[in-house]
Structure formats: C-alpha cells, structure tokens
Length: 457
Image 1: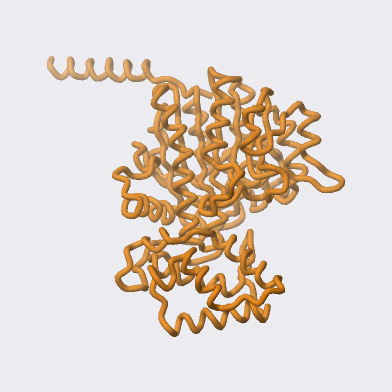
Image 2: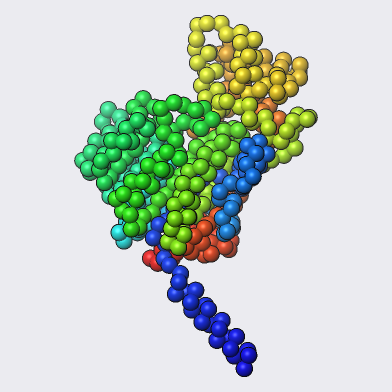
C-alpha cells in the first residue's frame, strides 16, 4: 500500500512540474565565434587569477553544461558559414554556403521562425553584420562572400534590430540605401543611439571606421561601438517594441579574429567582453526566470588555444597579458605605418614602445639572444622594409610582430596549434526555461531545434 501511495505521489509531482513548466518567451542565443573550451578556460583563469574575481565567468555558472560537435557537410573542419547555418537552421551544409542546404535549397532560420510567430528579433555582432554567423539568421546565398546580397536580405528580413561594425557600399552598391527603402533607420555609433525612433534599426560604427570589425576591446578605440553597448541597445529596443516575446542572437565575432591572429591576450579580453554582454541577458533572466532561455555556444574552435607551462621562469600564469595594451592587428598596422614613414625609427624607440605596451624588458624578461633576434627582425621589417608576412583569414602580420607576440604568449603560458579553425568540440552553456534539453552531447544542427522546442514552436 505504501508503494502504491509513493507511486501515485510521484505521478502527481511529475504532472505538477509539467503543468508549471512554461515555454520560453524570451530567447537569447550567444555565439562566441571561435570560442573553444581552451580560450574559455584561459579567460576564466585570467578572470580569477589576474582580475581577482571570486566568481567564474557568467556562462560557467549556468546549470547546464555540455559539448557540441561542429563538422560541416563536406569537411571535418567547418567554416563559419556552414557552422552558422547549422546553428541557425538545424541543417548542415557545405563550407562557404550560407542559409542553404548542400544542394543550394534555402533553409529557414529559427530567427525567421520566431519572427513569423510574433517574436521581435535582434541580430547583433562585434564584426560585420553581413558576416557568416549573423548572415546565417536571415540570408540565403551559395557563398558567404556575397556581402551586398546578404545586406539586401538583411534589409528585407523585417527584423527589428541589426547591429555590427559597418555596412557594405561601393560606387554602385550601398546597403544603406536598401535599408532606407525598407524603412530601416540607420544609426551611426554610440553618440547617435539616443536618436533611435523607428521600429526597425540598423546600428553601425561611425562613417570612416572599418566595416569588418568594431575594434578590439584591448585597443580601447574611442567613439566605437562595443558588444555590451550593442547588446544593451538591442535589448532595450526589443523590450520597448515587442515586450511580450523576442529572440536575440549575440555574436562575439572579435574572439575569432583574435584567435586567428594567435593573439592570446586580445582573445581573453574579448571573451571577458562577451561575458559582460552576457551578464545583461542574465540580469533580464533574473527578472523573468520562468520565461527566459539563454544558450551560449560557439560555431567552432579557432587556433587550438591551450594553457601550457610558461616558457619564462618566475612569471605569473597569464600575468604577462595584463601588460598588453594593443592587439596584434593594431601593433602590426603601427609597424607598417612606421615602415612607410620617412622618419628613421631607431631600435631604442621600438624598445621603449614594447616596454610600454607589452611589458617586455621590465615585467617580461628578454634575454640578450632574444633581443638580438628582435632587433634583427625589426630592422628587416621596419628599416629595410623586407619582411615576409604571416597571412591569416582576417589580417597579415609582419615577421617582427609575429615574434613579439610569440614572446608574450610564451611568457603567459599560452600555446596555439593553428592559425585557422580546428575540429575540436565547443562548449554549450544554458540556463532558464528548457535549459535541461541541452545536457547531452550535441551536434550543432541540434541546438536550434532544441531552442524551438523550449519555446513551444
């Protein structure tokens, strides 16, 4: 009799839980581009040991933690277009293809599905809004390089908010004109955010800024957008215009750019910046815990980054990154500018710069042999203008810049296996309504389906 009562009680309890469960009305999908578990662990360690924060990164405090496979339809190593398509539509496709199946049939993203069901939609990124990951949520093109076509489809999507580094325009093609025809208000930079007065908004950096990247956090470029600011603006816009339900995709695209450059310090700071944007969504979740779902993942791993034993004795683990003031990309551009300058730039001038911006020679010891090599490479790259570049997906770096960053990474105890993507699985973190659906080993094309299930669609 007692077993019967216990069995009945268990059924009633399960029924009560099922009845109390709610579909997610507010869905946040955070994608750290290139953010494998190696960079996440390095950022969390930096957050704990160097920044002295007593709590882990926000994503690492979520109750659901799992893994995700990333291979594409035609390669063990995916690119961002194929991965973005899988994460947005649930369909694996070939590398370079965006929003299409391998046989070039357009496939529907969850953003479109949400929008058709009355949800407001915001798509934001720290790189180009027409890049692979954001484009996967609204575009259908056989190749990710068709930026004008992607931009036109963004304008025609009907989504309430789109933001990123910049627009696409040539003498013949200007996406901003297409935005205007579709009654989308174009807002330029932080200073114009207060001018938003339309239901549809396209937020980009001020004119004259690069259109592929809002700028690295570590470079602290005044007047540029930041991922937390973009996220905050998008969230406020959706709360105002579609308060009953909305979907947001937030991409930390600069993480990938830094990892392609094998710039450990910039990558860590970008992940912490991504985490700051995530905190805004988590604060919203705390106000609506039964109606909000947050999912955090990556499209792929970039760089094969890992923490290793520092190659400089007596260095605090990752501590050398606290002296880094510029990204590898910014430093390389600085060096290229010196090479073009008529002024004769001496080694002592560069040595002073390296001390001020990387901590080399004071905080990070440099041996005589290392300095001799640096000086030789400096003269080849800057004085003689004869240096072979290291070519990556987003930038080219002269040999001198590569050597400087190798020394900094070695001192910090960070190693890389590639300048490109790897086939490593990526983490998945989730909290809120339906978060328990993400507990098992996932494939990237499963995640959007689980998100739709959590929303009852």
